[in-house]
Amino acid sequence: MSWQDLIRDVQDYPQPGVLFKDITPVLADPGAFAEVVEELGALFDEADKVVGIEARGFILAAPVAYNIGAGFVPVRKKGKLPAETLEESYDLEYGSATIEVHSDAFRPGDRVVIVDDVLATGGTAAAAVELVKRAGAEVTGVAVLMELSFLKGRERLPGVDLRSLVTV
Image (cartoon, rainbow, N blue to C red; front, side):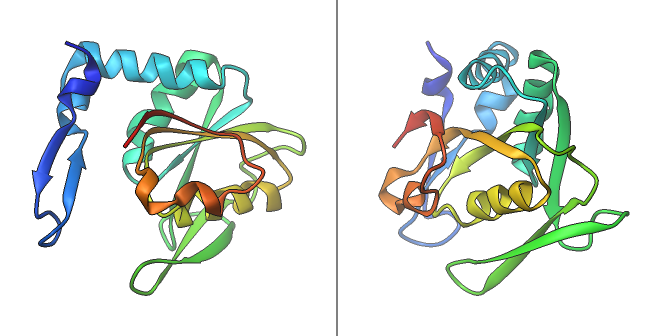
């Protein structure tokens, strides 16, 4: 059995009519989790920093950073980081949100890979790309465990090297 077989479908979550792809069984299995971390790291194995997007992106990005010998940088929801930040707002299906990164998280020219669990509509990933660029670093790519292609999130990332382990 491969780790992909551990992705669980949950009907009607978070609302009726939605088929949710639950990756928590993958994370709970030590072998599957290790494989996912290895595979994500192999997508972009040369980086100075790996960005993890709150919250599940942290679970994947930190061990990927460790495995490839890069630093880890958290991108968090507004108001969660203690020092001076850069912020980027983006639209959600209903409303908007803002994410932040410490303004000194990157050195000019740092090569940065952004890691997240799922690419859905692409708003959060696009905002993270913009934050990294504004901080003076270079986004070498975005790596996700799963891409929900029917939501067309890839279209919000023109010119970005986006790679996913699973596309549904």
